[in-house]
Length: 130
Image 1 (cartoon, rainbow, N blue to C red):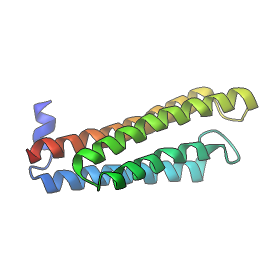
Image 2: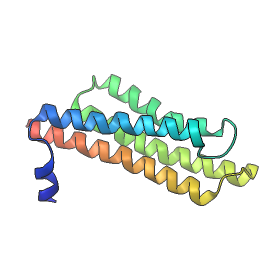
Image 3: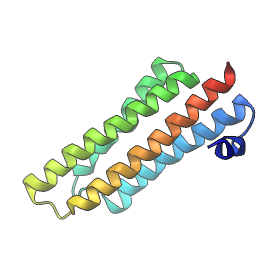
């Protein structure tokens, strides 16, 4: 673990930049995944996943983009992604959508983990600020 932490940038500003890049990259990856491939199948069922970036943005604005607030915002986005995934699985089961339940679960967990990693990186910014 200490080897991983020593590989991260040393200054709080650089750590914040890395965490912000991972956050924005995750959101872009989610949007491209929804737009190009779809998660739940054809149609607008994937829109449920847009709640995660929306919740993250609302919390980030409310906490004025400070590192501690960004960690909270991205943790909330990760939890919202998991809730969206549960709703998506329900849609697949109820509608018989063309998506596989395994694929929906796998993609949901992947996006939630990426949001979680970004949240963790923001906690390291806050820890290095002290």
